[in-house]
Length: 467
Image 1: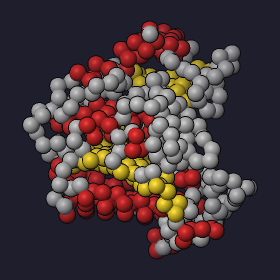
Image 2 (image 1 turned 90 degrees about the vertical axis):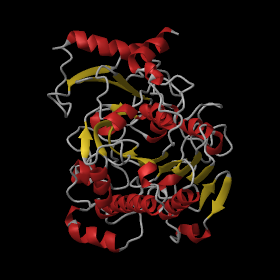
Image 3 (image 1 turned 120 degrees about the vertical axis):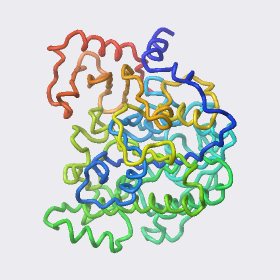
Image 4 (image 1 turned 180 degrees about the horizontal axis):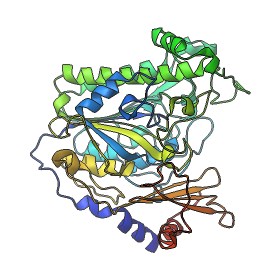
């Protein structure tokens, strides 16, 4: 099909032909930590001033900080689908958050080839811990059908709004949490999921493993144990700055819990996530496998304004415009830190542009296996191993089937955004020169008509379709 061929040519399927790592080399463990709705400005390596994240700073001091890393989309399910498949949202089946009753999201098609399947076939033990959101229980697209030997957490991203749920899933088995029945708060899901992730790492330390830790923090609801960290932020943040939050309909599925101190709670959740990262780093060191583990930390999209959160207060989007659900930079440019001792330079940063669809070919190269399916990604393993720069002519593409339909394209310094894409007669087109306008304030489409037409043509040729 002409459309698909054109986009693959633009977006880099040839990247799968890069030289592979020698098969004889020991395969590294791959540990991918995915935060939920964490903005690029929410952690200290990217300039956060109020929230303490010493472990993520330690990770940055030991690894490589990406300043131009992009999520697969600006909301959860399509972003995670892009991560799993190595495809951007012109080719993925999931292009928005589509809820299925009574629990779960729209599934990926049966037989979808994922990064977990690739690594499982390469001899890796594979585990997913946290939020899935890519297929309801019993569907064709549950974790164990998509390449994961183990899964523990939330199948449904809507149910994941509740940090004290009445159940979680252990593979296909529903695990009841009676201590949380009737609004009780005995078991905090974040801590329970994190503990299962640590157990998986311990159990598989003797052979290659792929651990996908899709933590739910700091997504709303803004709830957590009110410990000394929470007390610290209640003292640090003036109560006069807080706007207490309560749900209009607290009994709806996916409702966010009430929170009198939402700013303090959000900051505490980010610091709690940081503590999880620190415990993982310490465990890798204790097990003697830190030097043979490729560790990636990132977020699924930009910061949220839900459940009482205020991204402007913490400058969560950094210097960028937009938040979750926007295709401006603040909605899709995410923090990403990669540590692989002996391969990544310590305490360095790179402005190489990468996106979630690059993960599958990158992990394949480190695992020493070819990529048997089409991908929009290009391996950035050469950067990690040789400190080399990648090609600057790539085109990055996103679309979202919510909010009237949105599309975005980036090539080099140029960024195009199309709004109301579901309604061609009302669609608007914007062009920004990010080298001069990082906040995307000045639409220069009329001043650069040739570039505008080129990026608009890419949008029009993309396989934009409703789910």
